[in-house]
Image (cartoon, rainbow, N blue to C red; front, side, top):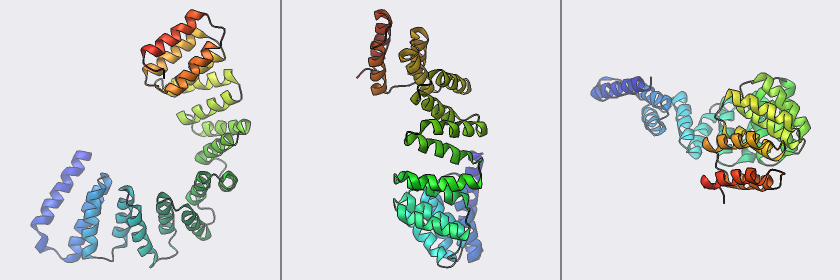
Length: 302
């Protein structure tokens, strides 16, 4: 599909060059606009920007071209230019919810969090229960370390839709960050009912159970996620950690650790801490040495 789209773009460009003098200004602007859309679809943002700008040079009144140019600029890391374009469109349509939301996101990417908050609140003045605005406000406040405000917006979002999976996961993560892990577990469980294939959901729930020292439940969750993805390195490591330091099952623990490392787990700090905890167990010396030798062989000890 990508190769076919590239070929179509090349044909259009050749035809455009060959007949540039045979088309009207608006027709030429439309051709440039279509080429730009093709490059945007291919995620070739610099080329898309180039052709949107050519189109707008011929016909500056194309609102959709300006919007798409702003989108391409944003994707290309040119948030300031994207903001300039959207602000120009807002001068003609100041109550356009889509434009306000776009500008809010662009300002957020620029690090102007308070400006983004103000813009999202304007969106909510136009549509009080706008889902993206509510969710994004919660994320911005979370980033600002204002967890109370972040939860306030998530509460409003979940009141609107108690089955909003993304909001449930975010709320559980916030609660975990506040050390309210038992409450977080319930949100992660609700999330997994809605997203039973979510690896992130299972890992979050397993870590919550580990924090609560409910290791059998954590192992059960990790076994489920490893059925979904047998190559999930973090799950293998967490399983090894429990088996080697809490359940004290050296054979299964070694196998899990071996799987984690062979699949690419290489966090030397975490592995050194694991070995320290293993050495504090009641394992036989040869069992402890087996793990140390394995990690040393893999060059994974600090």
